[in-house]
Length: 117
Image 1: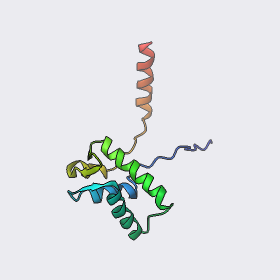
Image 2 (image 1 turned 180 degrees about the horizontal axis):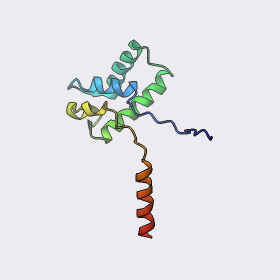
Image 3 (image 1 turned 30 degrees about the horizontal axis):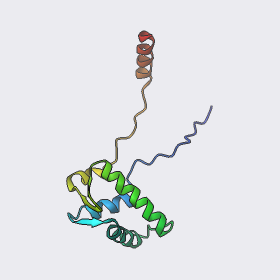
Image 4 (image 1 turned 90 degrees about the vertical axis):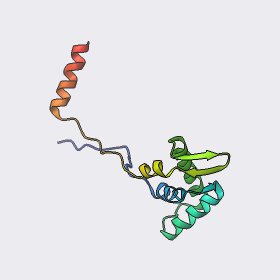
């Protein structure tokens, strides 16, 4: 019997940096990145979760922040960032797990593909 090995790493839940970003940005105030990072770094150090160096954490936090901006959960006005609380509440909800296809569904999909040819 062959053992299936999953080569890809997937993380379906938000990480600690995103959790703290959401917590800080949900305060309904506006932050510049430097001020936001200082609060974020302090909170992560209090949770004993600030590892990997401050500069690497700064880069990760900026990347996560830009991801939230592109998803419409944070509004950027010049160099200031403001969280949208209604959208940020959805940021921490994990996506539904991937459900594998049943054998019947696989056979039906193969039949549709064969019929389309």
